[in-house]
View (cartoon, rainbow, N blue to C red):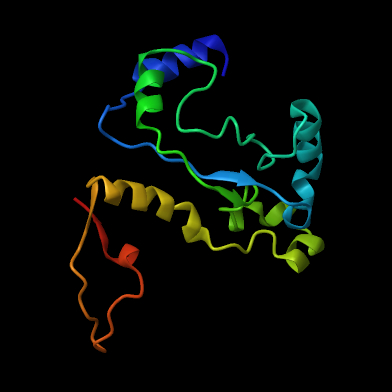
Length: 158
């Protein structure tokens, strides 16, 4: 962001000191990097001196609070940042139809966009359920008498 955009962004920000912040941090691997991101990946690796990034965000910057801007909202976010585990992924992994026009035959062969999309959502759900922002519903059987396999299937905003 340029300074004017930052002022507008933080002026409109509404962060509460009791709401946890979580992130998904990714580090890509050569065999799961989309061809369309290879040049960007190589540039970021050269620029940062490290390959620990998801093609667009370095793991040290992939936190739930601003790293380079210091203000009241940033302090609130830093205090509520729950962190996040590093996953093997690239920055575009949640996308599917949106990247169809840049998908190559190698991308299809290596299934670089075929990851489980819910893995991007459930860390957020788990953190918020842990702190009561999202509540767990009682486990109920379906019409076959089967209970859900995972507790996260019973999350509800509460």
